[in-house]
Length: 127
Image 1 (spheres, helix red, strand yellow):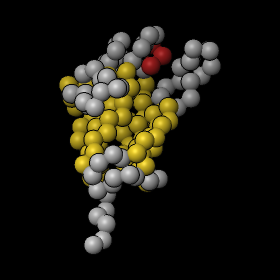
Image 2 (tube, rainbow, N blue to C red):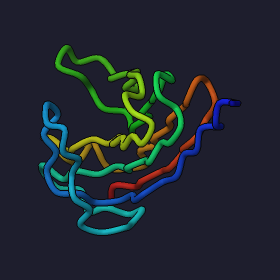
Image 3 (cartoon, rainbow, N blue to C red):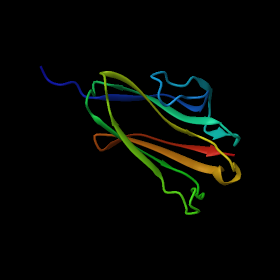
Image 4 (cartoon, one colour):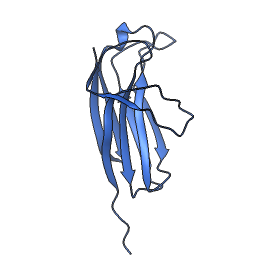
C-alpha cells in the first residue's frame, strides 16, 4: 500500500490564551486576527493540523521586528525544529510579548516547513 501524502491545514491563527511550553495542551484561540494589540504577555501565532506525516521533520522560523537581546545585540530570527509524533498532529507556532513592548511592534512572520517544503507562512502585525 502506498504511503499517504501529508496534509497540512491551518486550524487557526491570531490571539491565544496563555501557552505552557511543557504541556501537551495547545493554547485556546481567543480571536482570529492578523492585527494584535501590543501588550505584555500577549500570546499569538497559529495552530497547524498535520496528517499522515509521522516522523517527518518540521522546521520553523519567526522573523520579528528588530529588537535587542539581553547582550544588547539585534536579536536574530527564532529558528527551531521538531519531529511529527503522530499521524494526526497539532502544532502551535507563536510567541508572546515581553518588556519593553515598544520594540516588538511591527510584522512578525511565522513560517513552517515540513521536510523542507513551506506548508504555512503567516504574518501577524503587532500594533
